[in-house]
Amino acid sequence: MNTPTFDLVEIVKVIQRNLKLIIGITAITAIIGAIVYKVKDKEYKASGEVYMLNPLYGDRNHILRRSNGDMRFVDYFGTEGDVDKAMTMIESKDVQDSVITACGLYGAWKLDVGNPRDRAAMDARYTSAFESKRTENASIMCTFEDTDPARAAKVLDAVVKITDIKFRSYLALVKNNAKDRINKKVAEMDRQVERYTDSLVSLRNQYQIYDIISPNRQNLVINNTGAGRGANAAEGIERIQNLESIKDQLVVSRAELSATAYEMETDKADEVEILHYVSTPIVPNKPSGLGFILTTLACGFVAFFFCVLLFSFTAYIKALADTRR
Image (cartoon, rainbow, N blue to C red; front, side):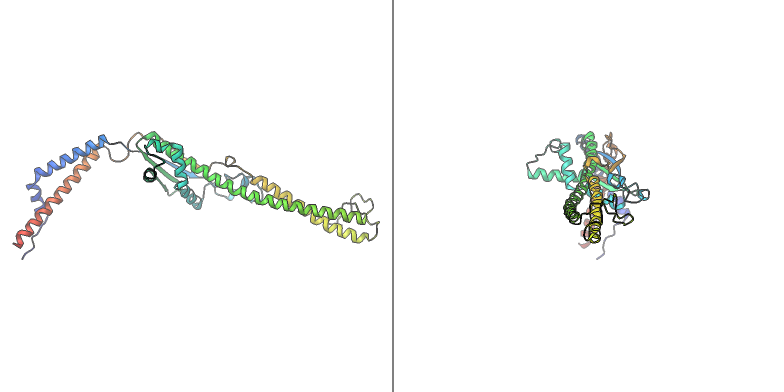
């Protein structure tokens, strides 16, 4: 039994035999595609590109303090790691929920926030409509697609602004937590200074030494009014000097920590914006996807290809059945 051959010539013959039917189906499909394109709601895609500022330059604590070294060697733009964090935050569920609430998408898309199915539908629709990706220049390109072009641009702008606010809120939270820990240390040092003060008062009364003794011993006394005149004066000077040096160091350290705590105390409004636009979202004036003509042609081409494939397969099966008989 010979297996029937089916080459390009046979396919052409199949097309010739069913030409009218193929043309009819192709034309009807193209017309249906054109009608559907005209009837259905158009989708508009708004796009915007943002770059990330280095958080060190957006943080007044790092700008104002001189102890951080020479800031000229810090890159003005965010590092690869910073951009990764921004991408994670932009795509987070927290930002998504905030944007949905801020832009009133439940009402705009006629969904009920109290319905679990509608909430799942909202999550799926938002996820499919929003897209973010990194560019080769370490910027972030964001797009949002919606049937309302103005709403698409509004939602995309809200995504960027809400992400920036949350990023700065996180930085402010970290610094305020550090400030609280520093203030606890300052309170502990206050108690230590108070104990050293009480000890110094007791020693001065005991040895009748009321002069300010320099811990560096360049000048043992200032305004010498009677140091060394009481009993055991040498012992008193040494003990007072030891306690005084420790207390002075504690006071200096406490002042530095208090200044640092003051610098750490911040609100997100104190910070410079982290995300900045390269291109701002504008209201799109053309729907996304294929246009009317390309949609019509695409539908006709798909129908033509499907018809050729179907009739060719049918002819091959028929020829194979005839050969077996």
